[in-house]
Length: 199
Image (cartoon, rainbow, N blue to C red; front, side, top):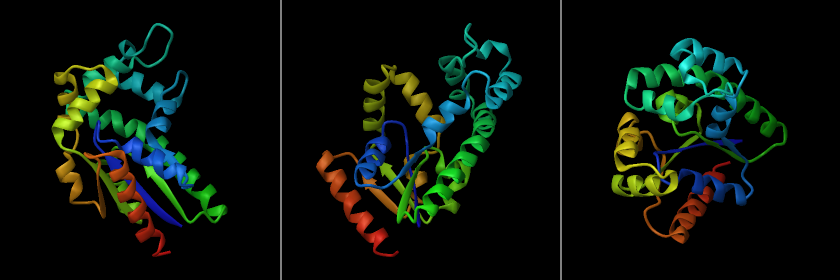
């Protein structure tokens, strides 16, 4: 089974690429969805986060106050790394379970859609690392439209993470998502043929 690690930056269109790959019949593990589930009310991860930040990181209903946490972590890389470590262990355990299940089915290829694939060091566990890349100006514009966030807030989030140009050094495949959707799909299809041809 070929394990493709898919990564990118905020607003790069990584989810668009993973969704397209899924329509082609390739199972996708969504690390973002897994990390959101990991910090739900009552979860062991959330208890660790409260121990780290204090009770002010919670909403009145006991759920994680995501905007409050985002404001803290995206302005301090040390805090960001500590927060990410709490969540990453749980997400990796779920990814391992996903991989085991797909191997049982004799699946030819799977995608691990992981925003922090390289920062976590998980890229070393992949058969092929794919990066979805766009210019920084496009990242900012798309993220502002998607999240209704200010340019300042989006820029802070981008600057808190590894740059796309730095991530590119670790990538086996780079998908340029700055053009049309048809162009992106054509690149993905061609690269999949390359990867699956190696099975």
